Length: 281
Image (cartoon, rainbow, N blue to C red):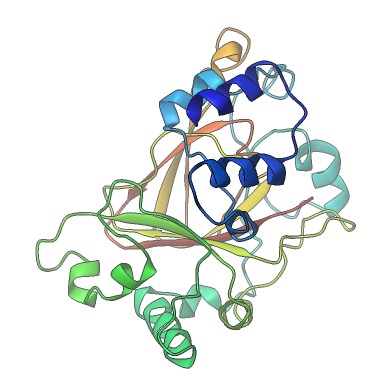
Protein backbone atom coordinates (compact mmCIF):
# COMPACT_ATOMS: atom_id res chain seq x y z
CA UNK A 1 0.00 0.00 0.00
CA UNK A 2 2.82 2.39 0.86
CA UNK A 3 4.48 1.64 -2.51
CA UNK A 4 1.27 2.62 -4.33
CA UNK A 5 1.04 5.84 -2.31
CA UNK A 6 4.69 6.65 -3.11
CA UNK A 7 4.26 6.04 -6.85
CA UNK A 8 1.23 8.35 -7.00
CA UNK A 9 3.14 11.05 -5.14
CA UNK A 10 6.33 10.61 -7.19
CA UNK A 11 4.71 10.89 -10.64
CA UNK A 12 2.26 13.55 -9.44
CA UNK A 13 -0.64 11.43 -10.64
CA UNK A 14 -3.80 13.61 -10.47
CA UNK A 15 -5.91 11.43 -8.19
CA UNK A 16 -8.46 13.05 -5.91
CA UNK A 17 -8.00 12.32 -2.21
CA UNK A 18 -11.35 10.60 -1.79
CA UNK A 19 -10.65 8.34 -4.77
CA UNK A 20 -7.23 7.41 -3.42
CA UNK A 21 -8.69 6.76 0.02
CA UNK A 22 -11.44 4.56 -1.38
CA UNK A 23 -8.96 2.50 -3.42
CA UNK A 24 -6.53 2.03 -0.54
CA UNK A 25 -9.27 0.98 1.84
CA UNK A 26 -10.70 -1.47 -0.69
CA UNK A 27 -7.26 -3.05 -1.14
CA UNK A 28 -7.10 -3.62 2.60
CA UNK A 29 -10.58 -5.12 2.64
CA UNK A 30 -12.10 -2.21 4.57
CA UNK A 31 -15.31 -0.30 4.01
CA UNK A 32 -14.47 2.26 1.35
CA UNK A 33 -16.97 4.70 2.85
CA UNK A 34 -14.79 4.98 5.93
CA UNK A 35 -12.85 7.87 4.41
CA UNK A 36 -15.86 10.15 4.83
CA UNK A 37 -15.10 10.29 8.54
CA UNK A 38 -11.30 10.23 8.76
CA UNK A 39 -8.80 12.79 7.51
CA UNK A 40 -5.67 10.62 7.37
CA UNK A 41 -5.32 7.41 5.38
CA UNK A 42 -1.54 6.97 5.58
CA UNK A 43 0.15 8.53 8.60
CA UNK A 44 3.85 9.07 8.03
CA UNK A 45 6.35 9.55 10.89
CA UNK A 46 7.55 13.12 11.38
CA UNK A 47 11.09 12.38 10.14
CA UNK A 48 9.73 10.77 6.97
CA UNK A 49 7.43 13.72 6.32
CA UNK A 50 10.49 15.95 5.96
CA UNK A 51 11.63 14.04 2.90
CA UNK A 52 8.26 13.43 1.26
CA UNK A 53 7.09 17.02 1.67
CA UNK A 54 7.21 19.07 -1.55
CA UNK A 55 9.86 21.85 -1.42
CA UNK A 56 8.77 25.44 -0.86
CA UNK A 57 10.13 28.83 -1.83
CA UNK A 58 11.79 30.64 1.05
CA UNK A 59 10.25 34.07 0.56
CA UNK A 60 7.97 33.63 3.58
CA UNK A 61 10.89 33.43 6.02
CA UNK A 62 13.61 35.38 4.19
CA UNK A 63 13.35 38.58 6.23
CA UNK A 64 12.05 37.11 9.48
CA UNK A 65 14.66 37.36 12.24
CA UNK A 66 12.44 37.28 15.34
CA UNK A 67 8.84 36.86 16.48
CA UNK A 68 7.42 40.30 17.38
CA UNK A 69 5.03 41.00 20.23
CA UNK A 70 2.36 43.56 19.33
CA UNK A 71 -0.76 45.11 20.82
CA UNK A 72 -3.55 47.23 19.41
CA UNK A 73 -2.91 46.01 15.87
CA UNK A 74 -5.81 46.71 13.51
CA UNK A 75 -7.30 44.07 11.20
CA UNK A 76 -5.92 45.98 8.21
CA UNK A 77 -2.41 46.16 9.68
CA UNK A 78 -2.54 42.50 10.57
CA UNK A 79 -3.74 41.54 7.10
CA UNK A 80 -1.12 43.63 5.32
CA UNK A 81 1.86 42.48 7.37
CA UNK A 82 1.18 39.12 8.98
CA UNK A 83 -2.06 37.31 8.18
CA UNK A 84 -0.96 35.61 4.96
CA UNK A 85 2.76 36.42 4.78
CA UNK A 86 3.97 33.52 6.88
CA UNK A 87 5.48 35.91 9.42
CA UNK A 88 4.75 34.63 12.95
CA UNK A 89 3.52 37.10 15.54
CA UNK A 90 2.32 37.20 19.15
CA UNK A 91 -0.61 39.50 19.98
CA UNK A 92 -0.57 40.29 23.68
CA UNK A 93 -3.93 42.01 24.26
CA UNK A 94 -6.53 39.94 22.40
CA UNK A 95 -8.04 37.99 25.31
CA UNK A 96 -8.79 40.77 27.77
CA UNK A 97 -12.55 40.27 27.60
CA UNK A 98 -12.47 36.46 27.56
CA UNK A 99 -13.92 34.65 30.57
CA UNK A 100 -11.91 31.60 29.50
CA UNK A 101 -8.97 33.05 31.38
CA UNK A 102 -10.81 32.42 34.65
CA UNK A 103 -12.87 29.37 33.67
CA UNK A 104 -10.74 26.96 31.65
CA UNK A 105 -8.81 24.41 33.68
CA UNK A 106 -8.39 20.63 33.67
CA UNK A 107 -11.50 20.07 35.81
CA UNK A 108 -13.62 22.25 33.50
CA UNK A 109 -12.71 20.20 30.42
CA UNK A 110 -13.09 16.99 32.39
CA UNK A 111 -16.63 17.93 33.39
CA UNK A 112 -17.60 19.10 29.89
CA UNK A 113 -16.33 15.87 28.36
CA UNK A 114 -18.05 13.71 30.96
CA UNK A 115 -21.40 15.48 30.62
CA UNK A 116 -21.45 15.34 26.82
CA UNK A 117 -20.37 11.69 26.81
CA UNK A 118 -23.19 10.80 29.21
CA UNK A 119 -25.72 12.71 27.10
CA UNK A 120 -24.67 10.64 24.10
CA UNK A 121 -25.06 7.32 25.93
CA UNK A 122 -21.38 6.85 26.58
CA UNK A 123 -20.22 7.46 23.02
CA UNK A 124 -17.07 9.54 22.83
CA UNK A 125 -17.85 12.26 20.29
CA UNK A 126 -15.95 15.24 21.64
CA UNK A 127 -12.88 14.85 19.44
CA UNK A 128 -12.45 13.94 15.79
CA UNK A 129 -8.67 14.01 15.84
CA UNK A 130 -6.48 13.22 18.84
CA UNK A 131 -2.74 13.68 19.29
CA UNK A 132 -1.25 11.69 22.20
CA UNK A 133 2.28 12.82 21.32
CA UNK A 134 4.60 10.72 23.53
CA UNK A 135 1.98 9.73 26.09
CA UNK A 136 0.16 6.40 26.32
CA UNK A 137 -3.28 7.99 26.09
CA UNK A 138 -5.52 6.41 23.46
CA UNK A 139 -8.11 9.19 23.48
CA UNK A 140 -9.85 11.84 25.56
CA UNK A 141 -11.55 9.13 27.61
CA UNK A 142 -8.15 8.14 28.99
CA UNK A 143 -7.12 11.74 29.60
CA UNK A 144 -10.21 12.75 31.52
CA UNK A 145 -10.29 9.56 33.53
CA UNK A 146 -7.18 10.89 35.24
CA UNK A 147 -7.61 12.26 38.72
CA UNK A 148 -6.84 15.94 39.21
CA UNK A 149 -3.91 14.88 41.41
CA UNK A 150 -2.44 12.81 38.58
CA UNK A 151 -3.08 15.53 36.01
CA UNK A 152 -1.16 18.01 38.13
CA UNK A 153 1.52 15.37 38.87
CA UNK A 154 0.93 15.68 42.60
CA UNK A 155 1.22 11.91 42.98
CA UNK A 156 4.55 11.69 41.16
CA UNK A 157 3.02 10.89 37.78
CA UNK A 158 5.10 11.68 34.67
CA UNK A 159 4.52 14.82 32.60
CA UNK A 160 2.02 14.66 29.74
CA UNK A 161 0.87 16.69 26.76
CA UNK A 162 -1.98 16.12 24.31
CA UNK A 163 -3.97 17.93 21.65
CA UNK A 164 -7.31 17.37 20.00
CA UNK A 165 -9.69 18.80 17.45
CA UNK A 166 -13.18 19.24 18.81
CA UNK A 167 -15.98 18.45 16.37
CA UNK A 168 -18.86 18.21 18.81
CA UNK A 169 -21.21 21.16 18.43
CA UNK A 170 -22.43 20.90 22.02
CA UNK A 171 -18.88 21.12 23.35
CA UNK A 172 -18.07 23.87 20.88
CA UNK A 173 -20.99 26.01 22.04
CA UNK A 174 -19.84 25.63 25.65
CA UNK A 175 -16.25 26.53 24.84
CA UNK A 176 -17.22 29.56 22.77
CA UNK A 177 -19.22 31.05 25.60
CA UNK A 178 -15.85 31.91 27.09
CA UNK A 179 -13.89 33.25 24.12
CA UNK A 180 -14.60 35.24 20.98
CA UNK A 181 -13.10 35.83 17.57
CA UNK A 182 -9.72 37.59 18.00
CA UNK A 183 -10.22 41.27 17.23
CA UNK A 184 -7.24 41.50 14.87
CA UNK A 185 -8.33 38.90 12.29
CA UNK A 186 -9.03 40.30 8.80
CA UNK A 187 -12.63 41.45 8.41
CA UNK A 188 -13.38 39.02 5.60
CA UNK A 189 -11.50 36.10 7.12
CA UNK A 190 -13.57 33.17 8.29
CA UNK A 191 -12.48 31.00 11.20
CA UNK A 192 -12.87 27.26 11.21
CA UNK A 193 -15.99 25.97 12.94
CA UNK A 194 -13.87 23.56 14.96
CA UNK A 195 -11.57 24.25 17.88
CA UNK A 196 -8.10 22.92 18.56
CA UNK A 197 -7.23 22.42 22.22
CA UNK A 198 -3.76 21.69 23.57
CA UNK A 199 -3.18 20.78 27.18
CA UNK A 200 -0.31 19.44 29.24
CA UNK A 201 1.92 19.61 32.27
CA UNK A 202 5.28 21.36 32.66
CA UNK A 203 8.25 19.63 31.12
CA UNK A 204 6.47 18.26 28.08
CA UNK A 205 5.19 19.47 24.72
CA UNK A 206 4.97 18.70 21.04
CA UNK A 207 7.98 17.42 19.08
CA UNK A 208 9.35 19.37 16.12
CA UNK A 209 6.91 18.92 13.26
CA UNK A 210 5.02 20.65 10.47
CA UNK A 211 1.25 20.66 10.02
CA UNK A 212 -0.98 20.00 7.04
CA UNK A 213 -4.13 21.93 7.86
CA UNK A 214 -4.23 24.19 4.81
CA UNK A 215 -4.62 27.58 6.50
CA UNK A 216 -2.78 29.79 9.00
CA UNK A 217 -3.94 29.52 12.59
CA UNK A 218 -4.05 31.33 15.90
CA UNK A 219 -3.58 29.77 19.31
CA UNK A 220 -4.49 31.55 22.54
CA UNK A 221 -2.57 30.65 25.67
CA UNK A 222 -5.13 30.44 28.48
CA UNK A 223 -3.02 29.06 31.34
CA UNK A 224 0.65 28.22 31.71
CA UNK A 225 3.66 29.34 29.70
CA UNK A 226 4.52 27.71 26.39
CA UNK A 227 7.88 28.03 24.68
CA UNK A 228 7.63 27.93 20.90
CA UNK A 229 10.63 26.87 18.82
CA UNK A 230 10.40 27.63 15.10
CA UNK A 231 12.62 26.44 12.27
CA UNK A 232 12.23 26.93 8.52
CA UNK A 233 12.06 23.93 6.16
CA UNK A 234 15.46 22.30 5.45
CA UNK A 235 15.69 23.88 2.00
CA UNK A 236 15.56 27.33 3.66
CA UNK A 237 18.20 26.79 6.38
CA UNK A 238 20.80 28.91 4.57
CA UNK A 239 18.34 31.57 3.43
CA UNK A 240 16.35 32.17 6.60
CA UNK A 241 17.02 32.44 10.32
CA UNK A 242 17.52 28.78 11.26
CA UNK A 243 16.07 28.93 14.77
CA UNK A 244 13.73 31.25 16.68
CA UNK A 245 12.15 30.96 20.11
CA UNK A 246 9.53 32.82 22.11
CA UNK A 247 7.62 32.14 25.32
CA UNK A 248 3.88 32.76 24.99
CA UNK A 249 2.26 33.72 28.28
CA UNK A 250 -1.34 33.50 29.52
CA UNK A 251 -3.54 35.93 27.63
CA UNK A 252 -1.30 36.08 24.57
CA UNK A 253 -2.10 34.69 21.11
CA UNK A 254 0.43 33.07 18.82
CA UNK A 255 -0.34 33.43 15.11
CA UNK A 256 1.53 31.04 12.87
CA UNK A 257 1.31 29.34 9.51
CA UNK A 258 2.17 25.91 10.85
CA UNK A 259 2.07 24.53 7.31
CA UNK A 260 5.26 26.49 6.56
CA UNK A 261 7.22 26.51 9.81
CA UNK A 262 8.49 23.49 11.67
CA UNK A 263 7.50 24.08 15.27
CA UNK A 264 8.06 22.54 18.67
CA UNK A 265 6.51 23.47 22.01
CA UNK A 266 7.64 23.02 25.60
CA UNK A 267 5.49 23.80 28.65
CA UNK A 268 7.38 25.87 31.22
CA UNK A 269 6.61 27.03 34.74
CA UNK A 270 4.70 25.09 37.35
CA UNK A 271 1.10 24.88 36.11
CA UNK A 272 -0.85 22.98 33.49
CA UNK A 273 -0.87 24.80 30.17
CA UNK A 274 -4.11 25.09 28.23
CA UNK A 275 -4.39 26.69 24.80
CA UNK A 276 -7.26 26.96 22.35
CA UNK A 277 -7.25 28.07 18.75
CA UNK A 278 -8.48 27.69 15.23
CA UNK A 279 -7.55 28.22 11.59
CA UNK A 280 -8.62 31.20 9.48
CA UNK A 281 -8.73 31.70 5.73
